[in-house]
Image 1 (tube, helix red, strand yellow):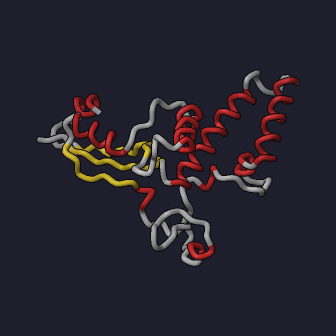
Image 2 (cartoon, rainbow, N blue to C red):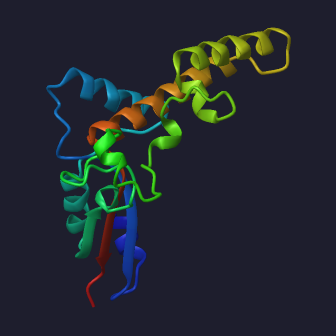
Image 3 (cartoon, rainbow, N blue to C red):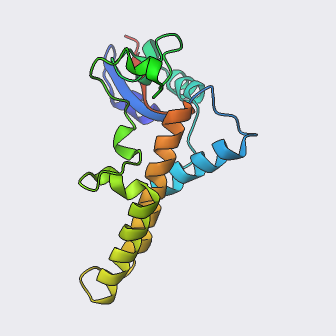
Length: 180
């Protein structure tokens, strides 16, 4: 953030979304560690930082913090449990459904073969992998396409599971101002 700070005029405002680990992330939990690794490798990211780490970095660059929040926690009218505001697909949570959908829905498995979500169930994973291998073999796709797709799917599945567990957010909003 220091380079952004350097080029901004005094009094200018900077806002950004960051992909971060939330307070729910537990580095001692093997599933959490696996999900973090899937996201990093599948999306070509360095070590994913926590929300406090990002906020400290913005402050450390000299910004005055105007606002920060995890926008994933905003009421979006979707499948959130009304008591906890956590993502839920329970019957009780669906009673409160008002049209919104969780951010990770496009990355969650579906059995509808006419959606891109089909590729995230066990059958879709296999069909995609071996379909691309056949296309590579006959020259319709470049060599390595199947391996690339597997890596990208793994990243997508890590994002979806991280969102379901609430250990990852792609919408950590930070707004800072360069002092006058």
